[in-house]
Image (cartoon, helix red, strand yellow):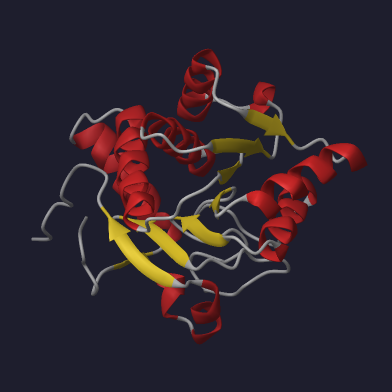
Length: 224
């Protein structure tokens, strides 16, 4: 864990951090995702919550982080279920790779279809959980969450479980800190590398909970 309380990263700077790690330092994206997921798992374990965990995963790298967390929580004996906002056929790259690992391991998952019976099952999962993890939308997302993403956020916010966001709460703008309708309301935000620029906004503060900062396996270059 790192505690760089002075640095903030904008959306474009987050992309640049990833580019430097991959192109300059030669760290594959899937290694960065593994490092992020393991660090977030450590944070979840620090919370000492006993009971089922639900991880809501989107299609991008934020969702890929969620799949890594699911695997590591399962390894540590947690009862964990992944709720997928999109069918697995829409996953690509490192997110798809980590989804496929979990599928081969037989980890429990359900995909949100929007059907009434399917939604009822997801509501029941969330109502029985002690922790709901938001891995739906990352720093690259702009505008209000749409379709299944919006409904899953609403379901999570309505549950009595503790809530934790990976990197940034879904629905909160990385640069401006403006919340959308809906925006995930976490008790804890596990942000990666540094706080995001939008976290400084007054409007964002009620949507962050307790923020902790976690490294992804390398130090940023020191500016000249």
